[in-house]
Image 1: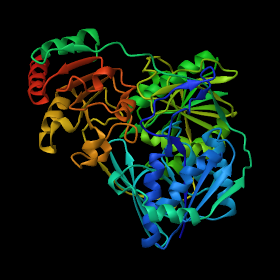
Image 2 (image 1 turned 90 degrees about the horizontal axis):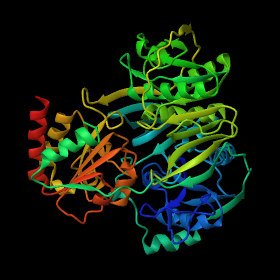
Image 3 (image 1 turned 180 degrees about the vertical axis):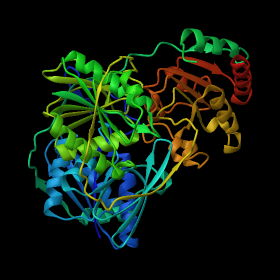
Length: 248
Length: 317
């Protein structure tokens, strides 16, 4: 089975968010970039399938050379091969088009993306790939079981879980639950050494036009100071919520 | 040219988020002198849509649309986009609508912009404000494609009453058979979901164990609230993943968020940033949550919460 895992290179979840150049660009200074957490849940599942499904796992990202450290980490975790489509990622749509173009040349049975990146939160990439390729598509995926050509997958819905069945090929939007946080693979020295020998190919981009563009950014207004209520005066809290905040 | 709003319904009931999407669509239509075409699928009571700005209702009933699938629902919208000259599509931020939006973006090769919190500040260029960096920031985003798909962030725009007398048009669709089948839906009946809740009561490791969750559930029940939890609590298996709130969990955009025994890691605070009023109850006065909250009590949850429940129960009577 051929699996493609799409990787987004994002600021670490603990990063302080700041903007520069008149609030038009994210300030990368001092920020560590990591595998997008939703993608990492998907990658871990794919690496498990190397053994259970004799799968071949390729990771792909759309980005400049600075994303290669993240791709090497994916190889150290267990991916067999990495591809970087060389261009600056402009929006989710054009990134998805680049990956779709690649998938039209090389066929994959299973394409795994994170359900969304934690920087732009667009949640667009897996849907666009599936929509253009006319593949089955399941996002917010929390369970996956493939037997032969048959897929059984679970999807988190508002207030519950939905179980779906379909055939391959399929595009998934992964999230926590597909594997657990404690299942994430921390590369060991052997993995890191082996990753150096694995292929990391760069291919030239098609440079699809973006359909959207983030013009400026700003941060939410600073919060007013918290109003403290004494532990034995819960009546006062109820009064504030009812008459001042008007939320109960 | 009209604006298409897809009004999601469940058991013939329009979701709050659907009426918010409709209110947004109406406000945008007024701004650009256009009208709102509202799509309903397998629904029969359109009263709510007539009270929230639908200028025209497209009533689709089809056996292949009985259960939501992104493919068939996207195909339905694609056919309407062609026949009704639609250039803007408004969706809610429900799990299904976002699922649908991204797939539709591929089908129509058009931008899908999610988490939008305001009506466009400008039409040419088309600029919308949306949240990004998991609620740690906003961006002003230009949508460049001719067809624009927007999902409105929950509880951001609000529901606005607007009485209309829409024409109702029934249309027939041809849908291909898909090999994707829904086998089972497991859903708690009657419980308020995090996505739809006005109030969310959330517990952290400070509650010491799953056996103490009755406190969270009781408080939520008195307030008509949904229950949620922090990441460590879901990682420890005390509560299901579906309740995990934060950067890798669910975002919360309720009117009131009550955090009990949650210290307030940056990832958790990001996830709840869109909630309007935040209350923290924690015995550690140094907990970072106090910097993000509107109201706080420094105290032992096991003493404060029962008192709170008792007072709220009295108030309800």
